[in-house]
Length: 105
Image 1: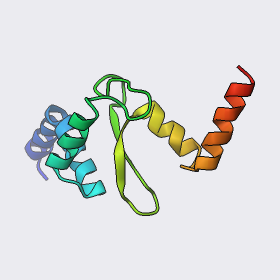
Image 2 (image 1 turned 90 degrees about the vertical axis):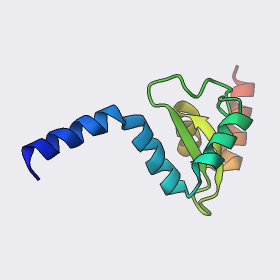
Image 3 (image 1 turned 30 degrees about the horizontal axis):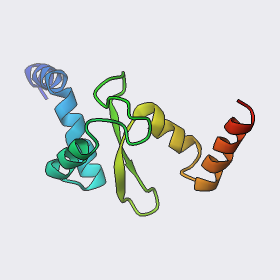
Image 4 (image 1 turned 45 degrees about the horizontal axis):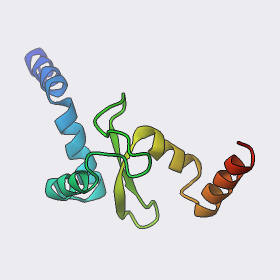
């Protein structure tokens, strides 16, 4: 690859970063742009858990999915997606965490 090609690719990447990232995510989760747009519209641009604005924040939105089946569940903000991941998507652990917070708040 020549220097000019490398420089062009770098400029192209930085100019199209968000579009390329979305394309990678759609491919990874096997959903179309139309399906993504419909989910975003159905959720009114808000996180499915905390109702925060999905277009705000440093890390942008996450496409939440079932790790066993690969099925897309919805769109989450980065902190909510990380929270689910920390609990390994285990419903019983999330319930126990909620009960703990209720008891100790």
